Image (cartoon, rainbow, N blue to C red; front, side):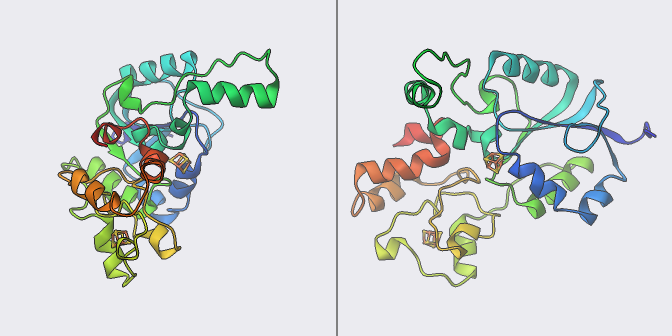
Length: 250
Ligand code: SF4
Ligand code: SF4
């Protein structure tokens, strides 16, 4: 039964892989602890019956890719006191934004034949359509970082990001620096809190946690230009930031 003193939360998803919701489910006890303060009144993955009332908080995963999804996003905005983007698809456009209209049509032709007319629009960050109150970045999000932010949100605290970049976590893990080996990496400008998970797995950082406030993108580009081709640099920057403001810095 719904307790009126609890905050009403809706969790919605548009086009994406749902990996960020899986991270939330993985919070287990932490999620249960939050549920003492919050009623999840609309969550397609977690309940059979959804309520469409006013939401104190709406979390949105994914990005709208059809006109109908864009309309739904606007309705959710109208019904929500706070709207929070969950995961890089929602916050930056992310993986769905890698393909532009022309490339998408090429794939439609290849998969469905030349007669097929796609309804999809370019993947854009949610902020292209509605006002967003906070962004929880990551592809996927970090469950622990999301739990920290939810806790602050529920307790009415000012929301903030960790005050360090991915390099800090990479150095804490005592990993060798890719830049010194003349391999690209966006760690110096990327917002930290992911635990440098990609670096630990032997990959570069592509900045899925967003760009740290005040990051010196130009300085990183100066370093990258010394050993990487323009195309290679573009590939790194466009993995998650094809439609984010960062792309304008290049
Ligand atoms: S941000 Fe990544 S993990 Fe999350 S829904 Fe999008 S593609 Fe999936
Ligand atoms: S640039 Fe990349 S590899 Fe080097 S310290 Fe930063 S995150 Fe680690």
